[in-house]
Image (cartoon, rainbow, N blue to C red; front, side, top):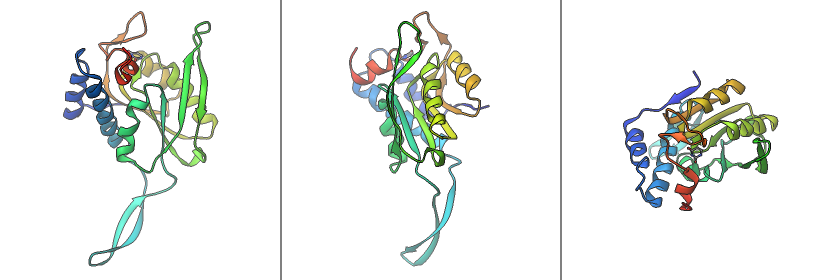
Length: 208
Ligand code: URA
Protein backbone atom coordinates (compact mmCIF):
# COMPACT_ATOMS: atom_id res chain seq x y z
CA UNK A 1 0.00 0.00 0.00
CA UNK A 2 1.38 3.43 -0.83
CA UNK A 3 0.35 4.87 2.56
CA UNK A 4 3.07 4.77 5.20
CA UNK A 5 2.14 5.69 8.77
CA UNK A 6 5.52 6.02 10.46
CA UNK A 7 4.94 4.94 14.03
CA UNK A 8 8.46 5.66 15.27
CA UNK A 9 8.58 6.49 19.01
CA UNK A 10 10.21 9.89 18.43
CA UNK A 11 7.49 10.81 15.93
CA UNK A 12 4.71 9.56 18.25
CA UNK A 13 6.15 11.61 21.12
CA UNK A 14 6.61 14.80 19.11
CA UNK A 15 3.19 14.52 17.50
CA UNK A 16 1.63 14.04 20.95
CA UNK A 17 3.21 17.33 22.03
CA UNK A 18 2.01 19.08 18.87
CA UNK A 19 -1.59 18.12 19.67
CA UNK A 20 -1.49 20.18 22.87
CA UNK A 21 -3.52 23.37 22.46
CA UNK A 22 -1.09 25.27 24.73
CA UNK A 23 2.07 24.47 22.73
CA UNK A 24 3.93 27.66 21.78
CA UNK A 25 4.33 28.74 18.16
CA UNK A 26 8.09 28.25 18.54
CA UNK A 27 7.74 24.66 19.71
CA UNK A 28 5.02 23.83 17.17
CA UNK A 29 7.25 25.17 14.38
CA UNK A 30 10.30 23.25 15.61
CA UNK A 31 8.42 19.98 15.88
CA UNK A 32 6.92 20.37 12.40
CA UNK A 33 10.45 20.58 11.03
CA UNK A 34 11.72 17.71 13.17
CA UNK A 35 8.90 15.36 12.15
CA UNK A 36 9.39 16.45 8.53
CA UNK A 37 13.04 15.37 8.80
CA UNK A 38 12.06 12.00 10.27
CA UNK A 39 9.49 11.45 7.50
CA UNK A 40 12.15 12.41 4.94
CA UNK A 41 14.44 9.72 6.34
CA UNK A 42 11.72 7.12 5.68
CA UNK A 43 10.71 8.50 2.28
CA UNK A 44 14.31 8.50 1.02
CA UNK A 45 15.21 4.93 1.98
CA UNK A 46 15.32 3.68 -1.62
CA UNK A 47 17.05 6.63 -3.30
CA UNK A 48 19.48 5.28 -5.90
CA UNK A 49 23.20 5.36 -5.16
CA UNK A 50 26.22 5.17 -7.43
CA UNK A 51 29.75 4.03 -6.65
CA UNK A 52 32.35 6.73 -6.28
CA UNK A 53 36.06 6.80 -5.36
CA UNK A 54 37.44 9.46 -3.06
CA UNK A 55 40.82 10.28 -1.58
CA UNK A 56 40.56 9.23 2.07
CA UNK A 57 43.04 9.55 4.94
CA UNK A 58 44.72 6.24 3.99
CA UNK A 59 44.43 6.50 0.21
CA UNK A 60 41.64 5.80 -2.22
CA UNK A 61 38.32 4.60 -0.74
CA UNK A 62 35.30 3.26 -2.61
CA UNK A 63 32.19 5.08 -1.30
CA UNK A 64 28.72 5.78 -2.60
CA UNK A 65 26.84 8.95 -3.43
CA UNK A 66 23.29 9.77 -4.41
CA UNK A 67 22.80 9.20 -8.12
CA UNK A 68 20.95 11.27 -10.69
CA UNK A 69 19.34 14.68 -10.59
CA UNK A 70 18.72 16.30 -7.23
CA UNK A 71 15.43 15.82 -5.41
CA UNK A 72 12.91 18.66 -5.50
CA UNK A 73 10.97 19.56 -2.37
CA UNK A 74 7.54 21.03 -3.12
CA UNK A 75 6.03 23.03 -0.25
CA UNK A 76 2.36 23.88 -0.74
CA UNK A 77 1.88 27.46 0.52
CA UNK A 78 1.55 28.50 3.11
CA UNK A 79 1.69 25.72 5.70
CA UNK A 80 4.11 23.55 3.68
CA UNK A 81 6.85 26.09 4.47
CA UNK A 82 6.64 24.79 8.03
CA UNK A 83 8.13 21.46 6.91
CA UNK A 84 10.61 22.68 4.28
CA UNK A 85 13.70 23.18 6.45
CA UNK A 86 13.17 19.78 8.05
CA UNK A 87 13.44 18.11 4.65
CA UNK A 88 16.39 20.30 3.65
CA UNK A 89 18.23 19.44 6.88
CA UNK A 90 18.61 15.89 5.50
CA UNK A 91 18.73 16.68 1.76
CA UNK A 92 20.53 20.04 1.67
CA UNK A 93 21.19 19.87 -2.06
CA UNK A 94 17.49 19.57 -2.94
CA UNK A 95 15.89 22.14 -5.25
CA UNK A 96 12.70 23.82 -4.10
CA UNK A 97 9.56 24.09 -6.24
CA UNK A 98 6.90 26.33 -4.66
CA UNK A 99 3.18 25.89 -5.25
CA UNK A 100 0.44 28.28 -4.10
CA UNK A 101 -3.17 27.12 -4.11
CA UNK A 102 -6.34 28.81 -2.94
CA UNK A 103 -9.87 27.48 -2.85
CA UNK A 104 -12.34 29.14 -5.20
CA UNK A 105 -15.28 29.69 -2.84
CA UNK A 106 -17.82 29.35 -5.66
CA UNK A 107 -16.58 26.17 -7.33
CA UNK A 108 -14.78 24.88 -4.18
CA UNK A 109 -11.98 23.80 -6.54
CA UNK A 110 -8.29 24.46 -5.80
CA UNK A 111 -7.06 27.37 -7.94
CA UNK A 112 -3.30 27.84 -8.59
CA UNK A 113 -1.93 31.32 -7.90
CA UNK A 114 1.76 30.38 -7.86
CA UNK A 115 3.67 27.68 -9.71
CA UNK A 116 7.47 27.95 -9.55
CA UNK A 117 8.68 24.49 -10.49
CA UNK A 118 12.33 23.60 -11.04
CA UNK A 119 13.44 22.17 -14.40
CA UNK A 120 14.13 18.57 -15.46
CA UNK A 121 11.24 17.25 -13.38
CA UNK A 122 11.16 14.10 -15.47
CA UNK A 123 14.48 13.13 -13.83
CA UNK A 124 13.71 14.10 -10.24
CA UNK A 125 11.97 12.68 -7.21
CA UNK A 126 9.45 15.26 -5.95
CA UNK A 127 8.71 15.37 -2.20
CA UNK A 128 5.53 17.39 -1.66
CA UNK A 129 5.22 18.82 1.87
CA UNK A 130 1.99 19.97 3.48
CA UNK A 131 1.26 19.39 7.18
CA UNK A 132 -2.42 18.42 6.86
CA UNK A 133 -3.87 16.01 4.28
CA UNK A 134 -7.54 16.85 4.83
CA UNK A 135 -9.85 16.62 1.78
CA UNK A 136 -6.88 15.96 -0.50
CA UNK A 137 -7.88 18.67 -3.01
CA UNK A 138 -4.63 20.68 -2.81
CA UNK A 139 -2.52 17.54 -2.84
CA UNK A 140 -4.26 16.18 -5.96
CA UNK A 141 -3.92 19.57 -7.71
CA UNK A 142 -0.19 19.68 -6.87
CA UNK A 143 0.40 16.12 -8.08
CA UNK A 144 -1.54 16.92 -11.29
CA UNK A 145 0.71 19.96 -11.81
CA UNK A 146 3.94 18.01 -11.22
CA UNK A 147 2.90 15.18 -13.52
CA UNK A 148 1.86 17.65 -16.24
CA UNK A 149 5.39 19.09 -15.97
CA UNK A 150 6.83 15.61 -16.57
CA UNK A 151 7.49 14.36 -13.03
CA UNK A 152 7.06 10.60 -12.72
CA UNK A 153 8.21 10.02 -9.15
CA UNK A 154 6.11 11.85 -6.57
CA UNK A 155 5.89 11.29 -2.81
CA UNK A 156 3.90 13.26 -0.26
CA UNK A 157 4.99 14.02 3.31
CA UNK A 158 2.22 15.12 5.69
CA UNK A 159 2.18 15.39 9.46
CA UNK A 160 -1.42 14.19 9.82
CA UNK A 161 -3.71 12.56 7.25
CA UNK A 162 -7.48 12.06 7.23
CA UNK A 163 -8.79 8.80 5.70
CA UNK A 164 -10.86 10.84 3.22
CA UNK A 165 -7.78 12.71 1.95
CA UNK A 166 -5.80 9.50 1.57
CA UNK A 167 -8.65 7.92 -0.39
CA UNK A 168 -8.96 10.95 -2.68
CA UNK A 169 -5.22 11.14 -3.41
CA UNK A 170 -4.74 7.40 -3.94
CA UNK A 171 -7.96 7.19 -5.98
CA UNK A 172 -6.54 9.71 -8.47
CA UNK A 173 -2.85 8.90 -8.12
CA UNK A 174 -2.32 5.31 -6.91
CA UNK A 175 1.40 5.50 -7.75
CA UNK A 176 2.08 8.27 -5.21
CA UNK A 177 3.41 7.18 -1.83
CA UNK A 178 2.18 9.12 1.20
CA UNK A 179 4.29 9.31 4.38
CA UNK A 180 2.54 10.51 7.51
CA UNK A 181 3.07 10.65 11.26
CA UNK A 182 -0.58 9.72 11.86
CA UNK A 183 -3.76 8.63 10.12
CA UNK A 184 -6.39 10.39 12.22
CA UNK A 185 -10.09 9.67 12.68
CA UNK A 186 -12.09 11.89 10.31
CA UNK A 187 -12.85 15.40 9.03
CA UNK A 188 -15.36 17.55 10.88
CA UNK A 189 -18.08 19.61 9.13
CA UNK A 190 -15.61 22.50 8.67
CA UNK A 191 -12.99 20.33 6.99
CA UNK A 192 -10.69 20.10 10.03
CA UNK A 193 -8.98 16.83 10.85
CA UNK A 194 -10.12 15.27 14.13
CA UNK A 195 -8.25 15.06 16.46
CA UNK A 196 -5.68 16.71 14.16
CA UNK A 197 -3.64 19.78 15.06
CA UNK A 198 -6.09 22.60 14.37
CA UNK A 199 -5.11 25.12 11.70
CA UNK A 200 -1.50 24.14 11.04
CA UNK A 201 -0.74 27.30 9.03
CA UNK A 202 -1.93 29.53 11.86
CA UNK A 203 0.01 27.54 14.43
CA UNK A 204 3.24 27.63 12.37
CA UNK A 205 3.00 31.33 11.50
CA UNK A 206 1.51 32.49 14.81
CA UNK A 207 -1.54 34.04 13.13
CA UNK A 208 -4.11 32.46 15.46
N1 URA B 1 -5.88 22.38 7.32
C1 URA B 1 -5.44 22.54 8.60
O1 URA B 1 -4.58 23.38 8.86
N2 URA B 1 -5.98 21.75 9.55
C2 URA B 1 -6.89 20.80 9.30
O2 URA B 1 -7.31 20.11 10.22
C3 URA B 1 -7.33 20.66 7.97
C4 URA B 1 -6.81 21.45 6.99
